[in-house]
Length: 197
Image 1 (cartoon, rainbow, N blue to C red):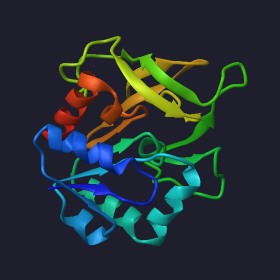
Image 2 (cartoon, rainbow, N blue to C red):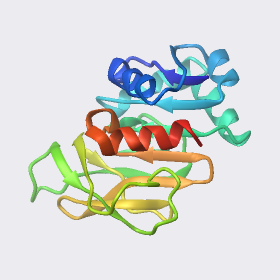
Image 3 (spheres, helix red, strand yellow):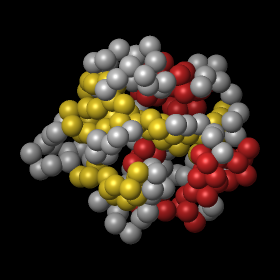
C-alpha cells in the first residue's frame, strides 16, 4: 500500500487519482503509523516551505526518515522535493529532512517568479529508474517560486533563470520539482514507474 502523506499542503486528490489510474493501491493519511507500514511513501506539496513544519511536530518526519533508512521507496513532489533538502530561503525557521545538505533557492530577479507552466527537462543519463520510458526533452507542468540547485543526485534538469533540479534520484529516494499528476502521459508514466519499483 502506498501512503500519500497529508500535511495540509498537498494536491492530494489529483495525486491519488494519478496513482489510481496506474493501478496502484494507496491511502491518503495523516498517521505516522500508517506511513511506517507502507510499502511506498509519496509526499506531495503545494505552498510555502513553512507548511512542512507540521511534519516534525506530528512525528511524520521521523516515520518517513525511518522508512527511508529501511529502504522504503519515497517520492517527494514539488514542495515534497524541496523538503528533502536541509532548508529553504522561503522559510528560514523551518528545517527540511536534510538528505541533501543544501538550501532551496529563490529564482533570480531576472526571471518572472513563480515559474508556472510547461517546461522541458534534460535527462542527465539514461539510468534513472523513475524516468524509464520518458524521453529527453519531455514537457512537464511546473508551478514554484523556489528551486532545488543541481545535485550529484540530479537525474534531470530544467532551464529557467539558470539550470535547476527537475528530478533527483538516490537509492530509494526520488523527487520531482514538477507536478506529474498534472503533466499528461509523461507524468503518468513517471507515477507508474514509482508505483512499480
